[in-house]
Length: 90
Image 1 (tube, one colour):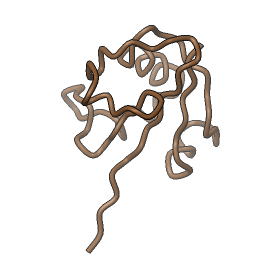
Image 2 (tube, rainbow, N blue to C red):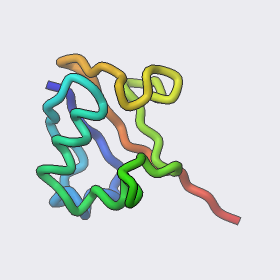
Image 3 (cartoon, rainbow, N blue to C red):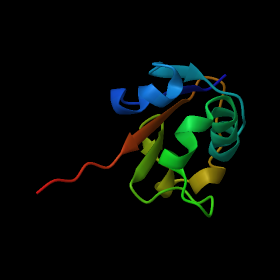
């Protein structure tokens, strides 16, 4: 079963969990599973049209899904899906 890891900033929306097991054979399916179980995180990941927000980076193991197959990137039994929001400042 793939595992989700999130930074502390998002644990508020996941009942204080920084790591959760996921079901799904693609990143999209895993995120559907996540947002079904923890709907409060959905608006922080997706816009009103259901698209992944631009400032959200997703990594399967160490690879950004943008350089793989996007949300259709396959997930294996032991894969780690990381959510990494972009940080900006000035």
